[in-house]
Amino acid sequence: MRKFLLLILMGTLIPGLMAANAYPAEEVIKLGLAGPLTGDQGAFGEQLKNGGTIAMEEWNEKGGVLGKKIEIIWGDDQHDPKQAVAVANKFVNEGVVGVIGHFNSSCSIPASTVYAKVPIPQITPASTNPQFTDRKLKNVFRVCGRDDQQGAVAADFIVNTLKKTKVAVFHDKTTYGQGLADETVKGLKKLGVEPVFYTGIVQGDKDYTAVLTAAKQKNPEVLYFGGIHPEAILLAKQSKDLGLNTIFVSGDGVFIQEFIDGAGPAAEGAYISFTPDQEKIPEAQPFIKKFKEKFPQAKEVGAYTIYSYVATNILLEAIKGTASTDGNKLIDYIHKTKFNTALGPIQFDEKGDVLESPYVFWQVKNGKFVQVQELKKK
Image 1: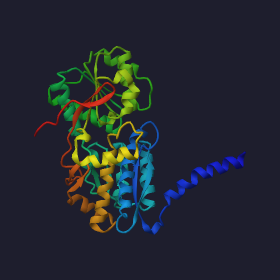
Image 2: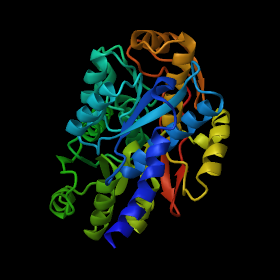
Image 3: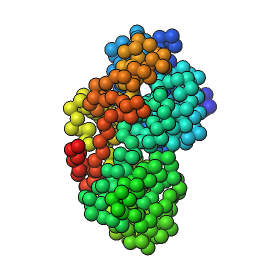
Image 4: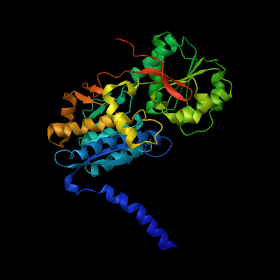
């Protein structure tokens, strides 16, 4: 029986090992892609993995880059900052020439110091905390927006669109979650609104009724949450169970079908900020078509799948454009170049932020995200 099980195990593992070493080492250019590939935030990690995989396969079908095939080394940081640093050191030791990731700001920021020492260009598809690019590291870039932009949009939406002024603010005490909550509070105060309640919750806890009960005493009209979907699901459900008559509002960390599926009826009517509908971006259509062909069982393309695809393509365009894998050359090229991407033209400022990063609000209607706000004209 043991011999039989061993044969089954070998049959499972060997094809995977062969796939990971499909090309001789000297004929491969390695990229690293990192995020929460498993665990409670694994759905977001899967989005990054899918976007990077499609980009890699497209380039390899065309012969790769610089005459070599492209291989992506996967790094599962499990949204743990210490694990993110371990992943970063692993990438450096394995000779990756560029990194896509990480997902969480609390991981991207400590990992970036490892990449900066080499240097290796790091493009995050999703880390929105301003600190990521505000520390004057030349090697960091992001293809998404910043939380000071997203927070200001949230505050304006709550006050000027929803016409609400009694806001209870929750965050998950992470770099992203608290950063987004604080930027939203900053925006509320600029509009003359002082939150009636402000607190942090612990990621991974399962019962927030005590803190929600405390918030209920302040009679809030809006429950704003800075954090990721696992905790958002619990807050939405438990606030309804306690009879809080509030509108649930949150940010891009909750823009995922798992929030709707997990919260069920409690998700209905929730407002979530994210970028405008990718289905309406002309340049995105070939990617969306490719994704649906490759993953026909997927419920959605996913918020950050295309961002990972774009980040991977920018790294590969830089390698092609410089005819080099030298980190300094790649970093300089990315800073100076305007890229035509699946999200439209992208160009970075001196910090590594995109020049344009619009946010709008979506609402959960009949179990789906529906864009309910158009981009404001400048």
